Amino acid sequence: MANNNDWTAWRDEFPILARKSYLNSCSLGALSTRAVQRVQQFQDEWHEYGASAWYERWLGRLDELRAAVAGMLNAPPREIALAPSVSGALTVIGSTLDYAGRPDVVVADLDFPTLAYQWMARPGANVVRVPSDDGATVDPQRFADAVSERTALIATSHVFFTTGAIQDLKALADIAHRAGALLLVDAYQSAGQVPVDVREADVDVLITGPLKWLLGGPGLAYMYVRESLLGWLRPTVAGWFAHRRQFDFDIEHLELRDDARRYEQGTPALPTVHAALGGQSIIDEIGVDAIRERNRFLTDRLIGLAHENDFDMRIAPRPQDRSAIVMIAADDPHAAVAHLAEHDIIVDARPGYVRVSPHFYNTESEIEQMIVELARWRDG
Figure (cartoon, helix red, strand yellow):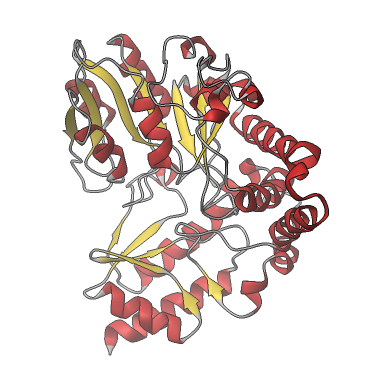
């Protein structure tokens, strides 16, 4: 391993690892002591200041989080907004587009359903679904074939939740932009485990959040919007955090902020904001590049052991296109997950597969134990 991290030492930061083999970061990142301490800080300030904590402390924390996310994505803070969820962020962005001339929104069959639902429910929009030829990845040419002068945007994942395959964002951005369309990326499954550089990838909108690999918990999402689009993508849904002078409480005039905060809605979930700051500090301290290297090592070990034990998998054919999400075929994945849980091994089930998602804090021995128990369950 070409880094200086003591991965075993990091395990002390996550209490669940003392009791269980937690291999389910794709569903929910492990809770750290740092996150707990930041939430305790929020509670202490609530006790101390009451509502004045908003002005004394908490508005500054929102700025702190936006800045941290911006640094991770290689963007300025003014291009970052907070949202309650991916669905909430998509609703705001979906409201900015005129579908009269460009009704098509291109998604992949492997995308999380939220990406399609937003436009399936939106009048005037037409969802175009791009198929996978191998069941694990989507050839960029498939997107190129689907995009036309009717396309408003490509809306797809950086990492597919169904297979862990990583998409080439720059290739997709080039395809969208050649047709005069936008690229919207759901990076909820990638940020924190795979480097994300919005400048290098040339994406227009990117949505992610702290729930999974960023170790911050549920109730929050992050939205990047390219600054050159801020004036053009004017939302037709709004909340008081989007107002340029929100504390004027002006009910007669809506003046949107001139940065990405124009896409924010109501009061953010402050406990999650604080938990997210704790988790983000760990990600920033280690560095996503180092996490990616560590996770590739663990994932390669997992895939190798699965092959040795004759498990079928649904993964990207090329190693460089694989993330730390491994789908292992199982006749009854829910029963398999329950069996593993009885042995204090936490994974997840998806139709036809057991989904295993190690993060930097896991060990080879945990992966080996998981494969042994899964094989024991399969062989009866």
